[in-house]
Length: 376
Ligand code: HEC
Image (cartoon, rainbow, N blue to C red; front, side):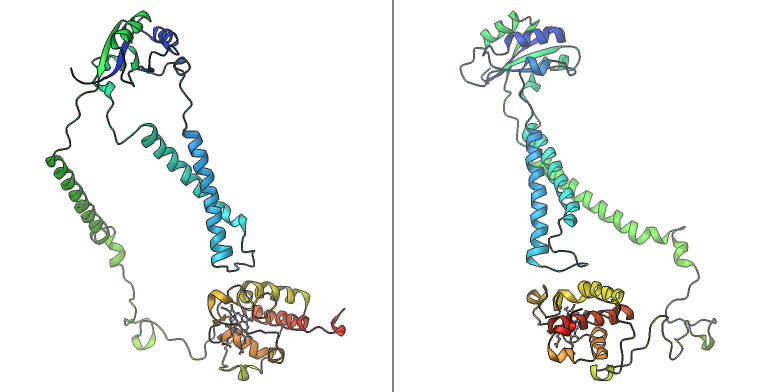
């Protein structure tokens, strides 16, 4: 009987006796009170003067931290470290940050609630509690109610505590001791666990292989593979010359697209802007310029876009005399073919969009070098 005393346990007949004893003993300085009952008993928390759980506060703090972290992270990336205009929106567009801020708040809160409850409050890696060695435990999960007074310190008088519990109405009392330290896990157990893990990996690998490689070759899945179809570059009787597919007829142009034969800005100079210079066309040109060209050439086409520094190239200042005299067709050619670091926008923009950008570019050039006669 050398082990230290963990607590003295008093067993009571019913919840009322337990509540009564708890309120009698609480605050008398006998030691830390704890109750063990087969089901939750109303009013017990108050009788034992339990503190509120700190979990809500922990979740609140970590959740707020998550919101702030998500905001700062997105602001740093989008507005500071790698600023790129998307769809003409401002760089620090907080509305677009909200979904991720929400997600990260939930993530931080959920993990705090889970880890906090399991590891901090329930002390998880330990699967054991001294009270589990009490001989009254089986009764306490059935029809008995117990109050324990934990020793906590060294000068604990087990006999006096037993007396106090008996006075408070306990039917029987028990001194619960710390059981001897449990044996460390044996080598066989560790080897067994490692073996089981390895086996699980092998089984999962084989199952994955079977699902991906074998399962699709079994009926009815296999019927997808066996249906008649024409493989690429195979012969067939459908087209003349037994070719599997007919080549495109010479001179074919996709609907809505004009052939673009020019190779240099000088050649393309023969093209004229087919769009009228109306308010609607200029507005469309501005919209397109701001979404596509502005990031490099800048809002005023002076070559001072936000991407310039990070991108390492210097986009042309399109307001200079040289580009004021640059024919419309040559600007069109730059948009179609790109030039050095400037990519082609043949796919990203329709023909009308390209020409409306050119109208708007002319307006920017005129505004940069405005004369009195330009005023309305
Ligand atoms: C990715 C950045 C980038 C974007 C976007 C961009 N440009 Fe450029 N642009 C450049 C660079 C860099 C040059 C200079 C190329 C050189 O001379 O090496 C240039 C040059 C030009 C030139 C002069 C071409 C010449 O032959 O001298 C024109 C005109 C032009 N850009 C128009 C536009 C228009 C219009 C748009 C929008 C449709 C646009 N650019 C979008 C980077 C860009």
